[in-house]
Length: 321
Image (tube, one colour):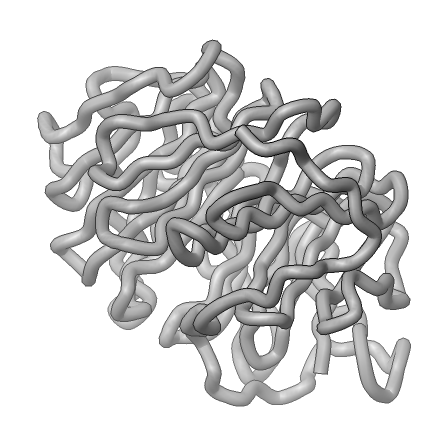
């Protein structure tokens, strides 16, 4: 493994831009006039923490505490679901969308796994695969509705996978590292992607089943977010304001400050990372630059859509136009 250069700016240009879902324009209803242009706050129907946010072909959805799922409509943010896939109020920590944008998958506490059809409003419960009721931290799905490969990051250090749309009896699991919680997972191909754990390790797979370590040596901080765009195009966010970019031969480190960065999304030479205290940093050709936001709440996730949305503690939603 190559040594990690500690840099204050990004020196490697990213490759092909990642495809973005949910590009339809939405009305500005619910946004406060914190800034005429830039980040603004939005009214939401929940005070529960929101842990992840995704763009679907039916708009932007966020998931959070108590199993809440909220949806951005032309009239503002509304509650789509409450109580999670089982109705037991299990908190939802991670979400992803099928390649056709029609199914929102989410995972959370006590083995919760749900699949929500954003077009029909039908909810499918895939909870407790193989009777596992550990907490699930994140999910990645590849393929189209009803034919998805599903990958779940477990708090017990396992990664669970189903190549048959989460059907009962189709789940396998593997422990890729030391058993530390797998915090985030993302795929760029049907069976190719990356995951990060709480032991400062990045894992890579090209078959969706077996995993190898990719680094990062001497990181000194836990990892919380990963954006997997290609075998040689990976970005990781973590504690201490650190962002790492893999270019196929080495990890390039950027330091943004001291906020824990919980999520990262990069496409080409443009990207966003969010974290503690309302921190938002934007990537451009000259590196990562902090942007002002109208909140001090800890931000948990961000999705680059239209508008771009970041979510966090206390039902916080901030939008960028």
